[in-house]
Length: 213
Length: 213
Image 1 (cartoon, rainbow over the protein chains, first blue to last red):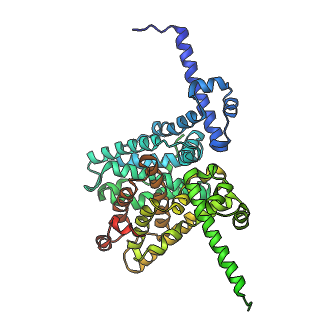
Image 2: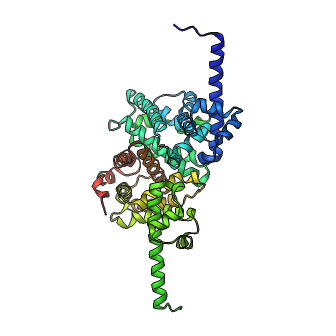
């Protein structure tokens, strides 16, 4: 066992806080300027940090962009309290709401969509979202809430893709103001093909469920 | 009535052919290099044309990108022969197949997804696709093939968003090789929420339907 001194612990905690501050600042800068317009200097200034600290924690601008993309689920999952199919729906409702007010989530989504334009090809955030949604569907299956024809992994992957594209469409058309309504419609048309009639009647499609701080 | 001389008609036809050649060349260059890596010079060279002709027809690189994005439906619609819900499904099957082999379609989709990275915000292609799909659904409604709860415009917009995001997901994960299977799954889960049981049993979910040259 390695003994950690108090000084080392303080240093580690400071490093974690610095990394968090840089990630948050980078998200704000990517959200405002996009990848091409975001410079390491701009991010360091926003974080009240040094470019040296940025390179220490993330190696490159691409490295920071990857970390921002991959931080998406951390902005949603701790805010959920339901289970099964309701949890699957609630993920998307919280996501709509948080997209309006959380730069870390917004930048993560923007970078994931636009990444091809700056030479990245990273499906980590898609796979993580699909994994989180598949867990909800597996729980729903155990509760007898899914139709026999449903494959949990397939539906999870479809919902991730559908939400991604619906978000882009909504962003181009209305600056995302109509995104919550579009997501509710998705569930109204999709749930009959995945939930049993009994489970369907119990699911709450209520935008207020997404409004968690 | 304005009389058009033979010389004028020949000149007009040549202008149309030049525009087409530039659009096709631009699509190939955007497809290979993305927006940032595509230069007017590179596009003119590929088209066997001059940069002057490019500026005459499209004003700017952004102008060419918009034209490529908006050309997407022209690569699909002339290849369709079915009607109603089957036509809606067939659009997506032809789209999957053509994405593998038509640079004009592939570049249009890529630019539409990545446009935020280079400062464009154009939802024209989304609106056109939604309009084309809404026509299919309106035809399906007239044939009694839709459930009463279905709003044709809502479903059309959802399918456009879902296909866009599914394409991006598939591109990141498998270079689009699994896109046809993902699209078939979309229909298996979505159709029960929009089609009557009788209509549903008649719809052919067969990838071979997309293989049109």
